[in-house]
Amino acid sequence: MESGTFKLATWNVNSLNVRLQHVLDWLRDNPIDVLCLQETKQEDSKFPYTELKEAGYNAIHSGQKTYNGVAILSTHDMTEVEHGIADFEDGQKRVISATINGVRVVCVYIVNGQAVDSEKYEYKMRWLTALNTWLAGELKKYPKLVVLGDYNIAPEDRDCHDPAAWLGQILVSPQEREHFQKLLQLGLHDSFRLFEQAEKSFSWWDYRMMGFRRNFGMRIDHILVSDALKSACIAATIDKAPRKLERPSDHTPVILELGL
Image (tube, rainbow, N blue to C red):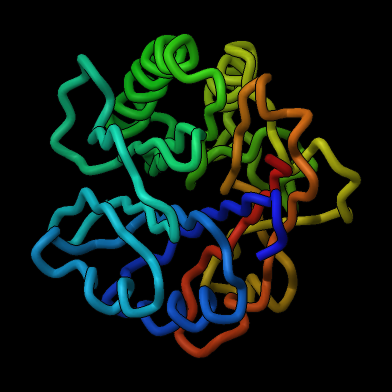
């Protein structure tokens, strides 16, 4: 690791039990300071703390059986660990936070929403409102803050392979995009868009219809940085290599490099 750089990444692994070796191999080939995972889909008692420690990573996890689950892995010590969104009762394990190397790291797995006319979509709206309120307070406490995760929102049409086909559906609905904009209005910045990027840059591809091969994807995995860290951003990339593996996650890692 180069002196003065601090690399963070986010990856929805869609079951750590299935994808653990993918994660270990990726960390070996891509040494970074922090990796946030979503959809670990396992209880804390099943989490592979030992294997990750052997690979050089401390880990904290908030999990449940079969669904959801978030984790932060780091080569550094983690302090001030918190689970969930303060003052928002939620039985689903979707948020975990820690302070690492002077940076407040928040790992989120935002609700999918199922369909715009569903109860799950209404839950997503409530959840996003609670996240916004909570993060407003967190930013006051922690000026150097990063929010990494699977947001289940494609912020703009350029983040969707076929906006017309997805019109009116989840991930691209006006309400979801408005919530994303409200996060930016808090003083957060979409780190990927701080740099010139190739057209049709996506982080998720459906398993069906040869989605990855045809690049029928969406950019729904994001790393938002606070004002205090914006000028420290050096590079933001998407690593498509893990999506090419056998039995891959439908998401792939998104990486941010900071100069601290």
